[in-house]
View 1 (cartoon, rainbow, N blue to C red):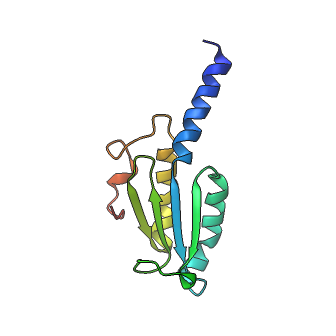
View 2 (cartoon, one colour):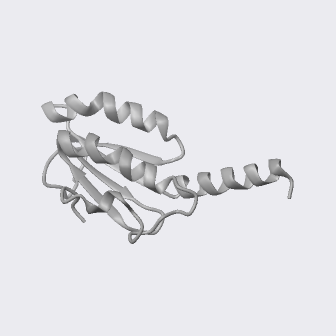
View 3 (cartoon, rainbow, N blue to C red):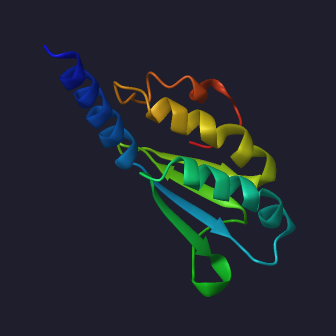
Length: 121
């Protein structure tokens, strides 16, 4: 098979894995922790434009969450990965996104990020 075709197919698989993900990020404009990680959220959302990003101001709606900042990553296989706080979100979000970006679209049994006890599953 032509090398260019193989590269194109790999690229399509990568985009389909990443674009199948959604992230709901809940924040409050009055939250110091949210303000602390705002630059990180902005940077990561720009690095992963194919992810469906929903940035939700909790003062503008009714959401069933315990506090902010709070992030829900909905994977391509239907799992919800929940991260909270100004430590946990920056520490683990990119690991999850990188794992989801692999060619074979990993499932919960292949994620390396899952071994950390800080994840709320």
